[in-house]
Length: 249
Image (cartoon, rainbow, N blue to C red):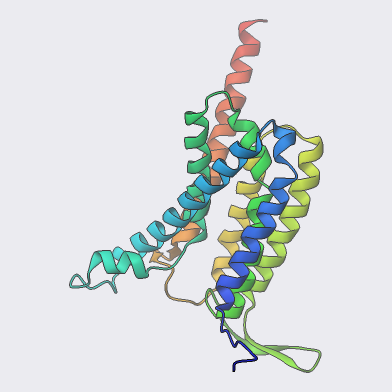
């Protein structure tokens, strides 16, 4: 007889599942507001789930492939299968999935889809970063003076995972309330806010598997690209609007 079943679950996998479940529940109570049928909502969620999974592994694989530590004798297919996950890859995977869905169903509004899903992105990521803390990945740099909480919990590394998790949950709440009254580009607010935070938090990390290029990590280069893209976009729109005003004066 076996009166008890002992199961060992990976902490990161559990937190990732909770993140997906929380994001799904959040979106479930929003999809009707954005004129999506339940079947269409499920299709969109499954498509974005697949593209998120694939792109998150793909970016990690590319970082490893072009890293100096990569050995050419390694099997590339095995390396891809065994590769980890990168948030920026998953994020762009989700946005690519939304874009593909809109192209498949042109009647849907891409802006409304972005507006609907944007708060769910930091909600999921917040749980993911707690999983990183539990798994011991994405860790911070060693502290000269360890942080002690309540005389029991002692941290010898800078808590980058927990700090980012708190920031992600803050972004979720902020984006939710902003989105209730703001019909503009909510995705832009999230991407810029996260990119700026991610650029600086990377300086406090010490895990080597991040791909360091010219002194900056892969995530920092992507963060810079995001900010530059929106700055250029803002300036071009500003110049365009001034040109239009002069045209009709």
